[in-house]
Image (tube, rainbow, N blue to C red):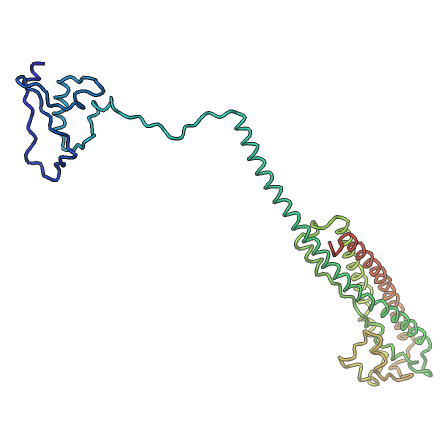
Length: 342
């Protein structure tokens, strides 16, 4: 203790720049260290004692020496760590977490689960509603296709019935051909053997259903009826293709051997499409007419070809009649299952 009292305090360096020396408001007041002749009466109370705790004079001298040797300015209110421990304020966090009970965790989990589940149900219901509306649009479009097909069938069925009668008359006239009777009036039926009106299937909706997978949007019974109708149409088209179209070329070659078309130049024009019976009366056919040959072998071969194609036309006529019935049945069923007002 006596050695510490005899140590004179060091003076602050005089060559420190003025800008590094803080103002009087920020620098701690000078502290006079007590010497053996002078007691330390001028030492501030906040250094000597904090909260009525007395600091030994030896520690005060050591702290003052460290402050004087430090180049960092010290502002008022800054206290050395050794002197600050007694007056340090403790700041608590503003938001204090309390331990939750398991019931609160369970309640939050249930609410979160219900929110996600209800959102899923709403999205599923919306998607189901959109698909249902789209299915109804497909049904409405298919009903329009059925109506177009039905109108075609209303024209084709009478045309093939008339063609069957005309071919039956042609067969009777072929039996009466001879050099004395001439052509016996068969020129009038020249194109009835190989010209016929064709059925154009309206399959726009069916193609959309197949390509987009739209059949899953329709009830199973309705989709089955649509698929069956499509199969019936394609089956009838195969029948007319394999039965009639394969006989068209042989019959045309036979007519070139029998008919002298110089009598009817109108037959060579594009405007005269004899696929409809009404156009037959627009051409002046010779009566009874003259054939290029009266060879019984060629005439018999022509008779056989006409009889076979008449049979194929009759089969196709039955297919068209059955298709019309199924068309009406499918249309009635779909209108019943999918009313247009709902």
